[in-house]
Length: 376
Ligand SMILES: [Zn+2]
Ligand SMILES: [Zn+2]
Image: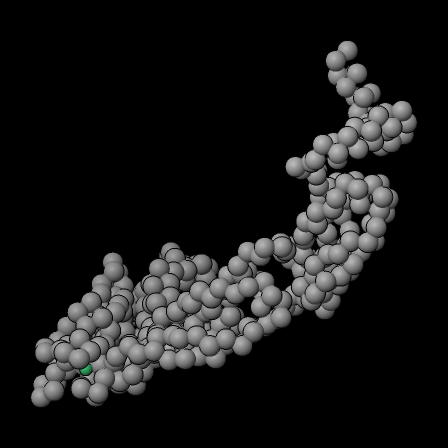
C-alpha cells in the first residue's frame, strides 16, 4: 500500500507557500464536503478527505514538512499520533462551524465573482369569509414590485457619477476573515455584498437602483382553504441582489369569524334555537347550511344540547376527498315576556306535569337520587 505524495495529494508544487497549501487544502475540503457528496460518492469522499487532511497536517507544520521533504513518508511516522487513524469525525470538528457559516447564508458566487443573494420573502395577510374559504375565490391583490430606476437606469448612482468598486473587498462582495486557524469568507461589511460603493446616490431611488411600485396579482384561493394556511406565489417577493433570484410571496389566509357557523377542520357546527314546545312535541325545524336552508325532523322530547348531524354539509378541505359534516346543536329556548294568560297556561301545564310525576322528567329521577346521596 503505497502512500501518495503529500504535495500530489494537495495538488501543489514542492516549493508551494504556506498560503498556497492552505488554499489548496480549503478547496479540496470543500470538494469532499459531506453535503456535496451523497450515496456511494460519500465514502470515496471520506477517504479523499482523510488523505487531504493528513497531507495538510504534515505540510502546514514546518518541522514536519522539512522532515518529509528530506526523508519522504519514512520521515513522518503516521503511527506517531498523526495520520489517517483518526475518524471522519475530524471533519465536523474542524469544519462544522466554518461550513455552517458559509453555506447557511444563502449567498453564492455569481458571474463576476460577486456574492449573489436571493431576495427576501414577503407575506401578505388576506382576510376571507367562511363562504369564500369553502367555495374558493379568485382574488386580486396589490403587492409591491420593484422596477429599475429610470433616473439612474438601475446603477443607483446620481446621473453623471458612477458607482466605484468597493475597496474593502475589491469588488468581490466578500472578504476573508481569519477565524482561529482557518480563514473564512464573509459578506463584505462595507458594501454589503454588492461589491460597489456609490459615492453620490441617485436621489430618485436613494441609491437602490430600483423603485418600489405596486402591481396587481391574480390569486386563486382554493376551495376548502382554512384559517392559517398560506399560499406561495413564487418569485413575487423582493428582488435578489446581484442578479440573485427573487424571493417568494406568501399569502396568509385569515378566515373571518362567521355569524352562524364555527369551523372545526372539515366539520361545521351551529347552534339552533328551538322553542321548548317544539322540543317537547317534536317537529320539523329549519336549519342553515352553507348552501342554503335545510329541514330536519327532531323527535318528541328532544333535550337541550342534543346534536343532529347533516352528513356532507360541512366543508371539503383542500386535501380532503369528501366534505365534512354539519352539526346542529339544539338550544332549547325559554320563552320570555309572557302575558298573564300565558303564565296561567304554563302554571296549569306545570300542575298537570307534577301529577304525572317523574315520568315527564327524564333526568329528574336520577338527579333526585344524586342530590339525596350528596346531602346524606
Ligand atoms: Zn436611481
Ligand atoms: Zn465590499
